[in-house]
Image: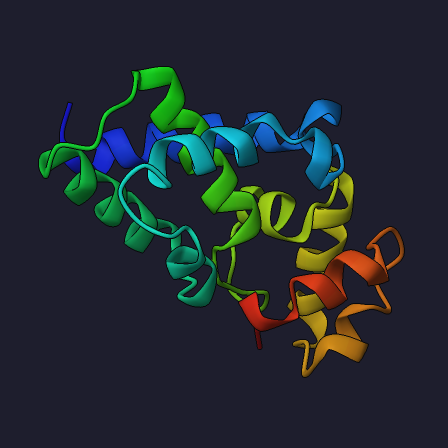
Amino acid sequence: MTPSSRRLAGRLLLAVLCASPAAHAGPAADPDAATFKQVCGGCHNTDLAVQAPRSYEGWYDTVQTMIDRGARGSDAQFQSVMTYLYRNLTTIDVNDAEAEDLVAVLHATPQVAEAVIARRATRRFTDLADLKTVPGLDSAVLDAQARLIFF
C-alpha cells in the first residue's frame, strides 16, 4: 500500500469514526482527547498542537514524524490521536472540502455535509454567518471551530 493510499484509507476510516454518535460526546467524555494528552503530552505540552492547526495531511506527517522520533503508543492509540486531531484541530475550506472532511471538522451528519456541498454548488460560502444558514449545522460548534474554517 502506498503512502497516499494509506492516508486515504486512514482518512475514510476517520470519517466513519467521526460520524458515529460516540464521536460527538462532550470534551470531558472524549476518549480521543484523553489519549491525545496521554500519548502526546508525554513529550511536550499539548498546547503546541492547539496553537498550530493544520490540514489532515499536515497532522498525518506530524504524527508520523513523532513516531519516527520515538513517540510511544499502540496503533490504536495513534489512530485515536489522529481522530482527535482530525475532529478538533484540522483546517478546512468549506467551499472545496470533501463530505467526510465536512462531517469531521464541522461535527455534522453526512446529510448536513451533503447540504453544504449542494449549497456551495450554486453559491460559494463567504463567511461563518453564511455557513450558519445551512440547516442542521450547530452554531456553537461552528463558533468553536471558527479558526479552522476557511472560505
